[in-house]
Image (cartoon, rainbow, N blue to C red):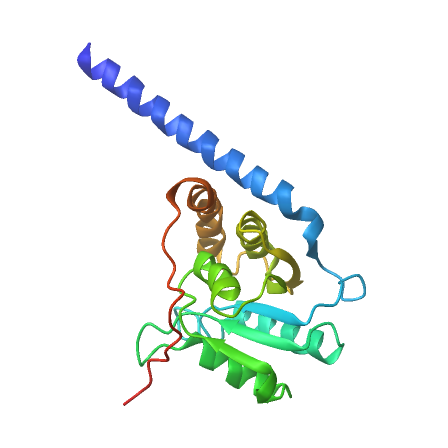
Length: 214
């Protein structure tokens, strides 16, 4: 009897978790859909863009298409006059891993001048990147650049932090390219809802130091 009750309780908890995850995903997408743009022609202009970081290489050491397409989208928006300045926010947790620097080098190769780029070395998570853009770089009106699936979460965080943000969806990767990334994003949206409304994790808003190679 006790075993049956325990199994029922576990199944109910699993079901509740699945419903919570589904509802959070629907809610995040619903709340942000009107602020995510796919067409450059329809995208309003902003002085500042926040580019969300990702690894330059895939886990297998190949070119990461998420990275490539974000950089191409950023360069195109700049050249089309949709943005004037670019904040590159990513993970620089060791001297061997520096997403902001990789993004800067890629954009330099695409013809973007160095003096319009600012590197944020402590964008360890999307939540950190959004909060730091407001608190460290004093921006509360900017264009987020990432893939469509990622933009929804970033916009949700931004709007709930009093930031007037829109986003531009960089070219998506082919179907099946990275199922793991999509699953992780599906689980990250409920975490974002909890972060914004319940957990309120502390983001570093006091420094912006690069960890350089010695």
